[in-house]
Length: 501
Image (cartoon, rainbow, N blue to C red; front, top):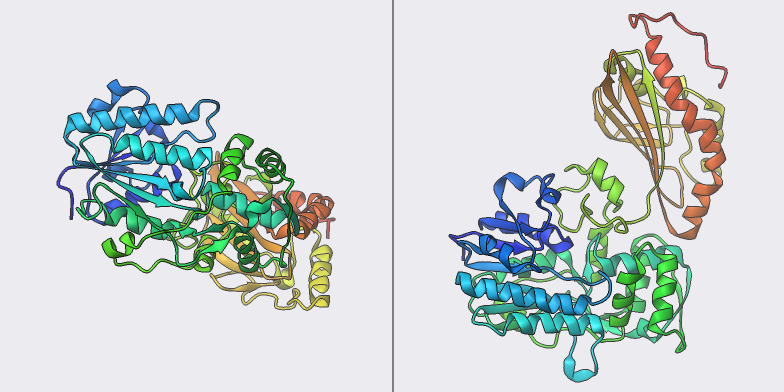
């Protein structure tokens, strides 16, 4: 059922909110986004198709305009990890939202809460707070649909990022007993399907709708499957009874980039079994959710890192998959990507500079340290890799899919971008990218070497090669800029061959 009036999304700048808005638009619903800082949404590609209002759930007076003309609303706001007193802030915020919705005559609030059986034992503070917020919202006259989910699998999801970093960094883990707690994770794609489908459905109004993926697994199994999908060795996981939640959160704070204030409530919640206990969701929504493995494969289809998403967010890499990383995700989100960036300026035009970049490799060799590149190719051959014997198809021009020594052309946009993906044997994934843009009377070249490591060996590999990066990457950008300025017709006198060969 499509809404004639705008659907309000409170928490539109959050992890789920940013992914939900385009799904609602695709389903034909007009959307009004509510945010404390609307400018945070200004770079979204759907921004021209929505209304945006500035409002804060902790300031009731700001909610009046947000609810004007609204008949349904999503409540995706929470304060977990926001310092002391976050549970009380969540209760007050929910009450403010409920009162404003009642006054505006809203017919439905959709709230995203957390799974957990209150009758099976004491819930963690995090899960108890989620249930409290749902209860506060449901105290009024507005029908509330409380979607309850466990771990959301998608790049940027806090629980998934914690699992990702633990598994990637530690081949051997000593874990508390919660490692064998059962969980029913759900892919972000599936969660969004349910979230859109319950809008306006009377069968879901005034109900708790538990949603989950196709599998019930333990956290131990989740880490092992993640390791397998990510190409890591099987993890050795030892469960011991002596690690308290506080010690566990401190340990996670050391091993992962998640802030301790966020890690602690998440760790506390791992002691509770979070599985779907009824079939209401399947009776309301005809949808077959992904398995846990499929959800992980979707999340890891491409390197999932904030910086990569910011500069490489294009349809070729990510499409419209809501499981992909987004530039707005928290700075701890996404897999680790290590990077070497070099910038050089040239008197040559962008066209001449890009032509110089496009001619690298093959029989011509590399701008500097060609012998080191060839030695690297021989080492790759020695361990069963392809080495650099493939050369290149054409000495001057490249196209997407071309082999270039032990690289493959992943993207080319003349005269602005060339991206190569490494195909040698590596403990991770590697890219080499050059971007060219006009700068004054000449041009600027930005060279990025990026590496997505697998496990400890991947990180050790990158740091062990840092001295060689200094010898190779730093002078390469400079050499390309100089060679472009010396090309015939550039107005510069030719230079002799580089002494770095």
